[in-house]
Image 1: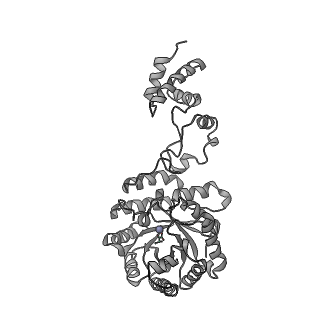
Image 2: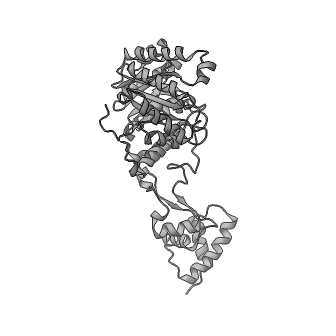
Image 3: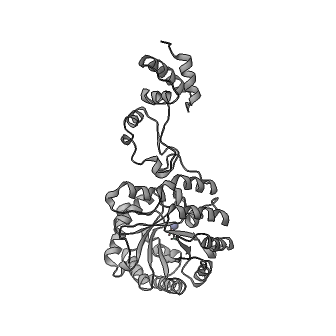
Length: 388
Ligand code: KIV
Ligand code: ZN
């Protein structure tokens, strides 16, 4: 059923799983702005919200369905008729609507969340997919807490929901519990043991509680999944979701994986800023791909190697993700090469002796001050230069 077996579908859930974070709540207008940027970025699916959760979320799904037309617009539900009715109503203007329904698959959730049995939960899962299918052709099923579910039961559930009409089957590691080889093996097991698996796309939905969301998603893809559920900047419940920019750049950097997305990666820096500003959610400076230090080189050894050939210390070009440029940060760990680079940028072409002299003074200053700026450099040169 897939046109291109090596294409990875990017399912963005910034506006649903990401927006669940306290303090990150957005107005409908803000959601539309972000959704438009996601559309330009080239995402395949936008999870617009959980319509039954509040009138505001319902309205956002309605308005977003009108405003954004290229990606599939998806709405989340639990496995009950009312949630599905409300989601279908919210999606009525969507050109390509998808209902994302599901239920807990681990014994933990079955017993301690639903106070139920495996058999009863299986029936509810099948019924929810069949019910959603009356409204839309495209139904995604999530097996919540699949990361901790019994694999034989999970396989049975997945086979049953595909038979009921699910077009995408989502295998969430809801609690960020799995190790990459465990998550990858789960996907492989489903791929090899679910009879009708080729009638659906397998989706990875990983949380970052142990810092493994990206690694687990990649393991899922390496074992047969073809959709990744992710957010911009990796925002989401607790420690967050899989970060879109990380997964996409891993696939782009490791071409030998043979997988690709349709994402315009040059938009990452801008959308990262948009999301951090709108959601009041700062990004750690050392965040991969979009953090302020992602392309900043600060130690002397690295700076020297970088200035000789950028590829010594650069595996991604900053311009490929829309980052202004790499920076050589001057600190007390910087070497002469980095200082010379900055002095030349400011028009000071010093001979060896003068450079040594200014470097000595620069180190004294850098030991006492963070953030050496252009004024500092100009002052160092005019104060300490020995006129030839
Ligand atoms: O983490 C999770 O299991 C989810 C589902 C609702 C898809 O977000
Ligand atoms: Zn989630």
